[in-house]
Length: 156
Image (cartoon, rainbow, N blue to C red):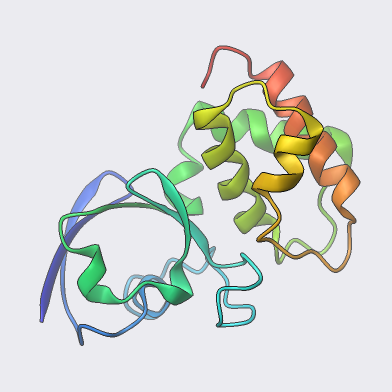
C-alpha cells in the first residue's frame, strides 16, 4: 500500500503494509530514531509523536491511518523555537537523566503547551500521565514544563 503523509513539514510517500506501525516506519524506513520503542503497547509514551497536532503513541498507529496526515517527530520539532524553550526548561529543572523517555515527554509538553500555554502543575501531570520515566521523577519534569511555559511565553 502506498501511504502519503507530511513528515516534519515535508511530503513523504512510502510503500508498506497497511497495518505496519508508524513507529517502525519512522525508525526502520526513515531513520528517525529519536522516537523510541519502550513497551510497544501504548503504555509508556517513549514513542510519542504529534499526529495532526495531537499526541499519539506511534506504536499504536497503523500505516493506513497516516494517509494525508501530518506527523511531527522529535527530529522535526527540534527545528522549532518552542523546542528550545522546552529543552531549556528541562535543563534548568534537571528533568533529564538517561534521556530514553525525554523525546516522548518533550512531545507531550508541546502538545499540552499548544493547547494551554499556561498550565497548572495538575494540568501538566495529567498531560504527561501516559509517559513513564524510571530515572528522573516526575516533579522535575513538571517543573521543566512549568519553566518552559513561563520562559517561552508568547511562543505557543
